[in-house]
Image (tube, rainbow, N blue to C red):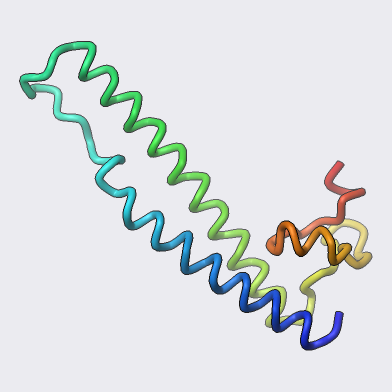
Length: 110
């Protein structure tokens, strides 16, 4: 992979990292603990707990995505970006265009 292409992916990954970090910060109210002794009804409390659990699941997925993006940025820094971690062959540019934080090629992923 040439330097210009790698630089373009680095910029995309840095933008994605900033976006994900900002999203996690804005969702902190949704993951707050549901007050048990509040005056809302039982069904409303169950709905609030379900919404909280969904927000916590989203936050966990976003944190995993952040880790993958940071790993991809580290791979760029070390010169291993775009190389499959399993078979050590190059990952297709088309795959990296769609998922710039990919660490395995399509063949190894399936």
